[in-house]
Length: 141
Image (cartoon, rainbow, N blue to C red; front, side):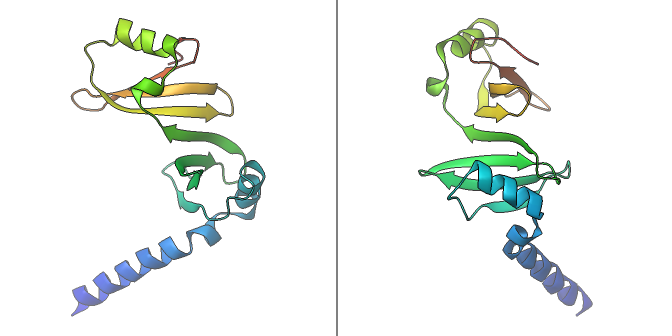
């Protein structure tokens, strides 16, 4: 009986957390989000392992993820893309240095310090390898 009670309590807590996530994002975060993405009023919020707030939302049917520090500073916005959508110079780097590697995921990232880059995640045993490549083909990590 006690286990059932705690299981129900845990599920209820998880449900409430999901329902009230918008309210849990600090005002500064919600304000910056509204300024950066006017008209988008239904982001799904959660707190990541670094203590930042991540919003998941859609613009023109495209799924985006944006991260904000607790004080409301925008950190980055990401969207998943396909290899065919990469700039030619980024494809050239992949073909030259990683031709035998299998791609797990590609994200186009706009970052507050690094600008635009492409985060290409390659499958490998253990932890996958992420390579960040600028549109001009410069590898930045």
